[in-house]
Image 1 (tube, rainbow, N blue to C red):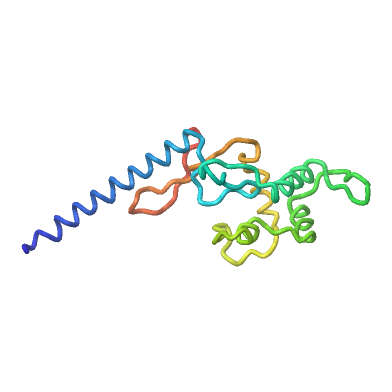
Image 2: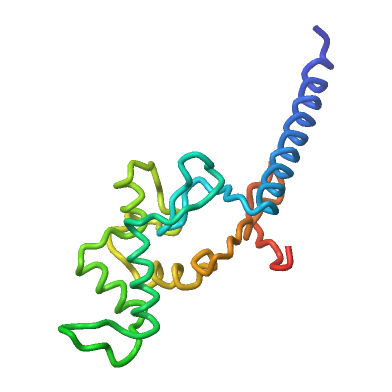
Length: 168
């Protein structure tokens, strides 16, 4: 065994890792262009199709909550037979959902048996928040548009994320 074996093996391993990373990115980009969902977890209100994991279908258990969130934000809430006079704030919606005992998205996913960790929280989330409601209201998936790949990593070696330009 010569002293050149380690650097040569290292160079081949480096090239293999780079080409594998490129192939995975190409596959994901192809799936995105074809309208396939590539996320690990479906957005709240949806679930992955049991036979076609890259397709989303409405989750009939959580979809009514999504509908309520949009209705309350736009028109307010009906209380004791009277319509709300104005829309509700995001914090107001979060408070209403919490008071009703509705599981927040991360909790709901865990109740469904998924090992889900919320990437937006540094501490254990235990209730609905205005931020969660805001994220739902702004997510284009609820208008029928699937937007994926909002961020990408610089390279397979540098895991820093950068925002993908909107035109891409």
